[in-house]
Length: 358
Image (cartoon, rainbow, N blue to C red; front, side):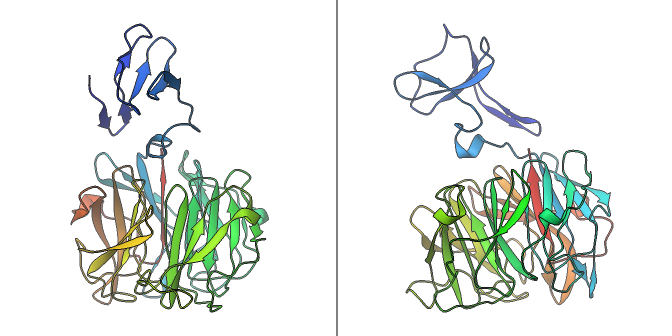
């Protein structure tokens, strides 16, 4: 029996309690009697709940989204949805409550949120949409940031917490995905030892930590617990420590994955990115570079996927466009996709944000 992956999800080998194999440690099966997933821990079969499932399988991502962004100084309210099994994009229309560009966002299991939604300016207003019904979500003051911001980066601890970095401040706002409420970070730690408040930020996140940075340095954020005061902040590639810079510029956006690796721009600013800088979370090291599928990019709209992700538009060749890229995490290779994978309903868009759901 084999594990198979389709557009609908993952199908695990099915056994009864009596026929379960003595498998390798970590093997996951479906128990057809108890109707639950079980994992072999080396001595026995252990039931898997969502909270105890391996990070890779806690959520099986089936859809990606892109929202907001701009072209030629015109920001959008538009949202598009990508089917990750067919590479086909659908236009959901103007779901956001207001226009928003030069920003970042966060998604819990059901909803997507974008900060500083004042067109292309600076503000506290948060716009949102529901990814289950593909409709506009009711706006709430509890969603709004505690400080006016623009051009932020958002790191995240799965669907639990979003860490809003930059936007003109050396500290963070924290969005709670369970309660859908915003608060200022209480740990009192600046992201950078030099007090940098650069607004443009790029981030990548894993199960236990996130990396982020701008043109002058980088930071490490530990997801110790859901308690904000327990967060640990360190530095990578910043003035406060030696080592390779996290990214060439905060406008070179990051690619997240669930395989312990993240990718950010190796050169360029708003465009001119031709290679990705590869970060390994376990060792906190730069593994060198790999060539991008599409060159001369920046201000990208990246979603996250199960074993691949998409770029839904960017800024390149001095224009905001809807070009689509598919990136395979395991091979670190990708390709440009055709028109059916491109965003619809806007003539081009960069500096929006990507989302995902199971």
